[in-house]
Length: 87
Image 1 (cartoon, rainbow, N blue to C red):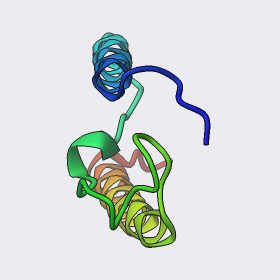
Image 2: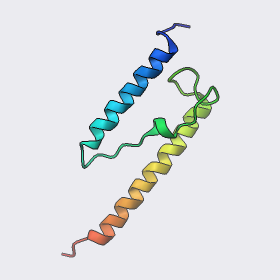
Image 3: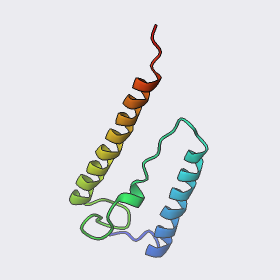
Image 4: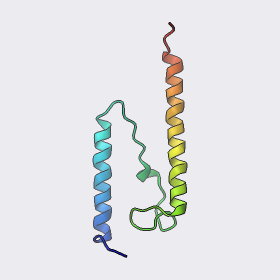
């Protein structure tokens, strides 16, 4: 086991990183970001340590990701139906 710093400092770093990524993403009109940090359950069942998913956490991560990507694809399909230009 190797300690990479005080746990709270690691949490602060991860949260700062996420804020920057979300902020940059908001500047891009053609970019979709799925905020998995906000949706993932917290705790030892889902994480082996401060940032690495357990097996159960990995499964939950994929479930959330599939659900969110499905919504995005469904929205894109609807947009194509409404904005399709007939040739």
